[in-house]
Length: 302
Image (cartoon, rainbow, N blue to C red):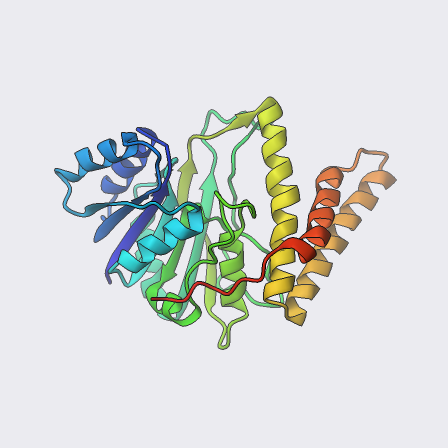
């Protein structure tokens, strides 16, 4: 089984060096390691090309495109692997990361998409900082009736045959676009409701560390508001407008019911509702997004 690892980066300079070294020190090395660089300067390229001089698996792809989904698609179209594993340029992978990924796909030949856990660093200040992470409960497989949006593109692996069947990432979503994020969630939704359904696993034991990029103070508040208010609202608007099906509407209503239930329980306990302001922003941007989000088609596989 040939495994390609893709890292998308922009203006991170030497930060990506730690990511590359952690992958190349793993117990299972990638058959190819692609870095897709959208940087405005040459700092990232210098770091990657220096490592590539002694590492033939490493390929550096400089692109003028902008946006995470576009970078992912550039990498996918260049990759030669049976599996494509994604991680981020500010992540350190566990030594057994890629070995466990390969074993999961070998143990389940019908597995299409895999999400692993993303943990914060040991130095993370839980009360005063925010860094994107997700602690997954192992679940094999995710089902339509019990599906809860989870997983991050920082620890995501896709079988190439799945990409050939359901297409590339939607380029109007993701970091670096007005839609902010959620391209990984959209891809999981698309796979889950494909016919036939793509098998998806969550595996806690497959882990990476999101070691950089913590935000504090006003920057933290702005990031969480944008991501979980505006970004989530525009994601739902895109999904309901461009890929409408009753199941998506049900999931949206389920999400709203859950948020209202959390708010009501907090009020009954005489506590300040947690996340209620962000939830209202989600509704606002979802409603406005239904009118403003452009109609897009999924990027075809070239």
